Length: 133
Image 1 (spheres, rainbow, N blue to C red):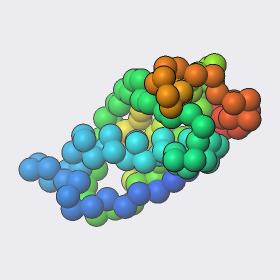
Image 2 (image 1 turned 45 degrees about the horizontal axis):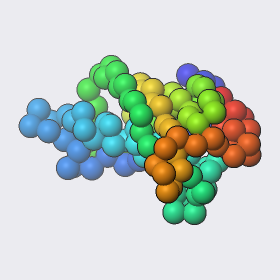
Image 3 (image 1 turned 180 degrees about the vertical axis):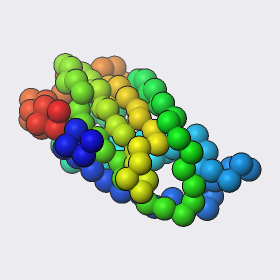
Image 4 (image 1 turned 135 degrees about the vertical axis):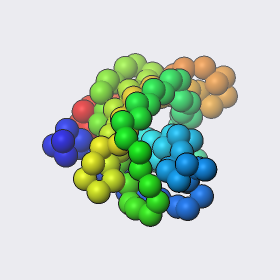
């Protein structure tokens, strides 16, 4: 499964990520996905405050496959599933101890900072995201 993802990042599970059932809750899993998205986008487009375009999450779907518990380190595998004119689709799988416990797919739209409307990505971004597919 590692070969399916050209981009990886890691996040440490925190005690505050757990719920009353003792497992990492769904909101924390969504935050882990967000961390992975932020890393892969920044690897191509640079840090948010220095980008010529803003970005917005258009859609995210998460499939919860198994429980995961504190403590641990989560490895987040990411790849660009689709490159559009103004958007990208990111596919992710989250692993703890070598076991996949969640998958996600997200659509990110790039927007003009003034009009807040979708805006075409620079060609260098399109090429960079395509290399991570």
